[in-house]
Image 1 (cartoon, rainbow over the protein chains, first blue to last red):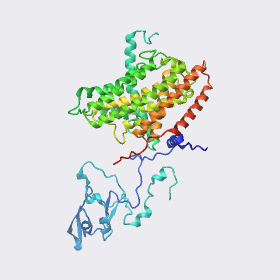
Image 2 (tube, helix red, strand yellow; image 1 turned 30 degrees about the vertical axis):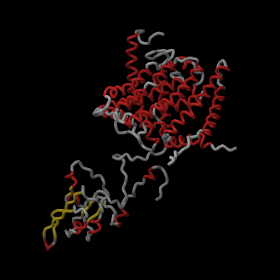
Image 3 (cartoon, one colour; image 1 turned 180 degrees about the vertical axis):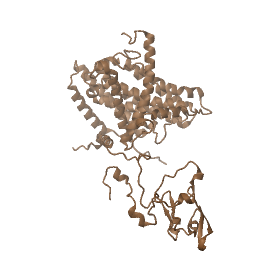
Image 4 (tube, rainbow over the protein chains, first blue to last red; image 1 turned 60 degrees about the vertical axis):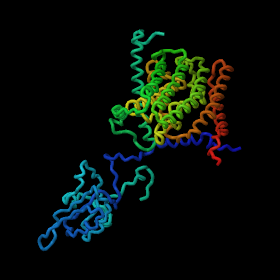
Length: 168
Length: 361
C-alpha cells in the first residue's frame, strides 16, 4: 500500500516551508517617498505641458476637451497673429484623456511624466499659463508623441525588483 | 518559602502587582509590534516602519489613537453588563499571571501547589466575559458570534486540559515550580503529541491562527465586541493579546523548561521571556500560513481529532509512568513513533460530516 502523505500533515509542513522561504525574499513594497518608481514611457499621467512658442491660440484643444476645462483667451497682436493672454487648466477636473494633445494641429501640447501633484487647496489645482509652460526640466511623455520615446528612462517593473528574471 | 524583597508581605504584593500589570501592558505592546513586524516579511512587505526607528512606536500610537476615541454605548444595551464585560474578559489574564513564576519561586503567589489547576480554572472565566459582551450589546449578531466563540473555546478547553494532564502525570505535581524542576529533557520532545495538542488547542483558545473564526478580521470582524468602541474595545484587544501572552508563558513553563537554561541563576527571567516570545513567533508563523477553518471543521477538529488523540496520549503517558520508575530519555523515540502513527491514523479516519446539506422539498 502506497501512502500519500499530502492528507496527513505533509501539506501543512509544505505551507510552513513556503512562508518560511518568504522571509528571505526581497520585499515587494515600494517605500514611496524615499524610493520612486519610473512610470511607463507612454504615461498618461498628472501633467499637461504647453509649448508657448508653438501655440497659435487656435483653441482646438479647448473645443476637443470633453470636460470643457481648458480656458483660452486670446487677443490680436502684431502681424494679425493671436496672442495667448490666458491659458488655464483645472487639473482637478481634467481626466487626462489626452484628447487635447491629439487634437492640437501644431504639436504644442504634451502630457508629462510627473505625478506628484497633490495639494491642500482646490484652488491650487487650477494651473495657469506659467505653470503649464514647457521647460527643460519637465519630462514629456511619449503619449501620442513617440518621437520622445528613445530619450525616456525604462519603466521600473515590479517583476525585476522581486529578484526574478523579467523580460527585457 | 521566603518572600523575595525584604520578606515583607506588603512589599512583595505591591512590587509584584506592579510588575504583573507592567508585564501585561508592555508584553501586549511588544506582541502587537512583533506580530505586525513579523507579518511583513512573511507576506513580502515591511510591516510598520514609520513611527520611530523600525516602527517601534507603532503600538504606542495605536494605543493613544484607540484611547482617544469616543465611547459609544448602544441605546438599548444593558449598561452595567456592557461596562463589566471587558473587565471580566481582561481580569483572568492578571489572575493567571499572579501564579506564573517568572523565575524559581518568584511570582505574586510564589509557589501555588495547585498552580496549573488554578490556571485552567481561571482561563475558562474569559468565556463568561465574551458572553456578557455579546448579550449586553443587544444585537443579535453579536449574540450569535458570542455563542460561536464560546462553543469553540469550550470545545478546545478539553484537549488543552488533557494535554496538560500528561505533563502533570510525568512530574507528579500541579505546582509550576515542580513541573519545571521535573524536566529531564524538555517536554516538547518527551511528549511531542501532547505539545502539539496543547499548541493547537491553545491557538483556538486565544482565537488565533487558523482557528480565529470568532475574530476573522478579514471577513466578519470579530462580532461579539461589535458594539464596543474606544477604551472598552481596547480592553478586548488587550485581552486577546494578553491571552496569547499567558498561553505562550504557560507553554514555555510546561514544555520548554521555563526559566531553566545556561546561567539560569542570573538570567532565568530572560530565558523565560525568550521562550515565551519564541512560542509566540511559532504561533505567528502558523497564523500567517494556514487558511481559516470553517465552523464545522473547527468543531470536528476539536471533537473528532484532538479529543481522542489527547485521550490516547494520556493513556500512553500514563502507561509509561506506571511501567517505568524514572522516565528514561529513550522514551522520546517511543513517543515520537506513537505520535506519528496516531496522527497518520486519525488523518485517515478524519471525516467532516456529509459536506453540503441538501434540503428536501
